[in-house]
Image (cartoon, rainbow, N blue to C red):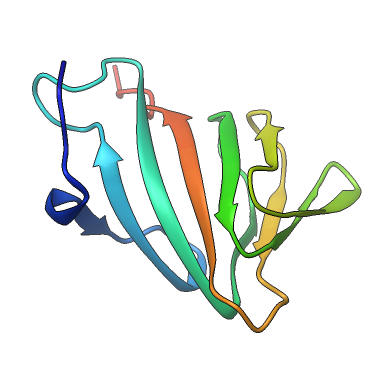
Length: 115
């Protein structure tokens, strides 16, 4: 078992995100998960991500607040404990259209290593 206290989580920068602060909860370290990592994203009002895509699949779980997710020509608003799966290579956009901070758990596989 590997425990990471919230106070020990390290911030990281995510490309093509605005008005968002992220913390890595697990992953990218020796003795951590080998196939995936988890992050915690705090989206300020008006903050968001994308539109863009990556070859990696993603799971988003909203913990508080709400975010609008657009992918594959669909749009939905996720609230507390709602989740969604985004397949690899799908263009997606996440927007916090509310006046409250939205907090989201992100679970993703590691990027493929160059051969």
